Length: 417
Image (tube, rainbow, N blue to C red):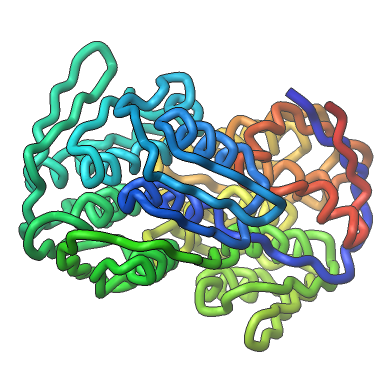
């Protein structure tokens, strides 16, 4: 499983670069199956989730080659419609292959997805949208068998601005007959990146980044080369690491617009933040301010994927902070692990009350999910003594060599396999 050993007390300083966004590369890799052509994807992060998506594409018959940060996918030789159950259960994002495979093959068999256990994440919205486009879906024995005689564009009103449902619908609609309009669409930057990729390949998608996305169906897509946007959550994690350690860190290769909600809350906590076109400098405060209310919301609100890291930061703030988690029901598992380190946190359903303490102390902890694991590493950076973070395979699903990047800016952290 592997673990991180963190010796706290070092102020971080220096420069660190951000790699491609996990939540962008996965739907784009899924979308490569639509065209039956060749895709060259640049700025690929070295993550477990990306490896799983590569294996899924290979299992379907695609030719997949990877060298360093570049992946080449030739989806012409696809010869399977069933996605291996063991791979789907490892990664929730695999569900967006439903839309892409329906567009390409008119049929797909997939099991219910896995991923981090952070509460119910029903795929009802995905299924409802695909049915409206003309898919027939049978559910039995934990599997979904989706097929269509031809998808047709329509108006789709999402009950909630789900990122995955928005992406799945876009992928299914790219080659559907007629025009599809998605209302109450998710507005995340990763959806804009998906639109860029698809349009480079010849699709006609517009409105990504707004609540109304329009897809005019086209018959064919062509070869494409695309560069993945930087990961805003990884950038936010490094920003929080600088703040929690009283550090001074420059984070390079970022898109400032994507970080505004995180910037606002870190400033509220007392951090000084400076930025230009594609880099941001964070200077941590000597005294971290409590935050009266932090509420996670769909983009452009504060991201749920940064909630755990902010909880670690606020655990040593002066005063009491309140976090409300509105996206996922079971995303406070890291609270009990932070408590092992001396944090005073009480959770009540979707609300966490954090009473800041003067210092955290090192302890043996376990990463229960991806972002919660990152939060434990941040806490370890500032804790007195040594912190062990076990089950780091969760962390490696979303952070490329986190320990090495932190070492480069002065952290005392090592990985033990």
